[in-house]
Amino acid sequence: MLVALLVLVWLPLSAPALQFEASKLRQTAVSRFGARAGTAVDRWMSNLESARGLSERRQLDAINEFWNMTVMAGEDIHIWGQLDYWATPIETLGKAAGDCEDFVIGKYFSLLHLGVPNEKLRLIYVRAQVGGQSIAHMVLGYYPTPQSEPLLLDNLSGSIRPASQRPDLTPVFSFNSQGVYVGNTQKGSVDSISRWRGLLEKMRKEGFVP
Image (cartoon, rainbow, N blue to C red):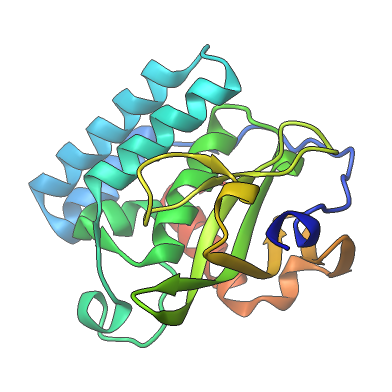
């Protein structure tokens, strides 16, 4: 079920690697969250540099491990005092905490910066079975080829596994900066997701060039 719903339209459009001003990012982190946040940004930069030049599959492992080990899972209401808040990577590192979207956002933009093609990545909303309950959740999907089932990067799991090995997840829709998708059909522009627009605006102010 999960695999069938996640076979998406492949768009042959590769955006340039995400760029940023490292010094400005660090300065922003320190000014908002203190010296510890600056150290976290330094560790992120080191992680990116270490992953540069690796195969895409090994880059997935490096980025997934960094975010899963660095950030403590929590709820937006406790972290930000809001029911739903999409944090930038700098905000997530500054708080050292985030919800599922924040993990995915950090991993997505890290992989874009390393040069992983945008069309290989999808932010996927799912229903996850956790403790006998169905909860709203988000994972990052990586598609090695247009015909491949995705590999899923998930803060609930330390290992990266194919969708067929995650029967606990049921996809709802997915998106990246190129569009919004339901099954194999593009349903519209990502600009229709207001929180995405707000996220990019915050990131530009921090020093990213998404």
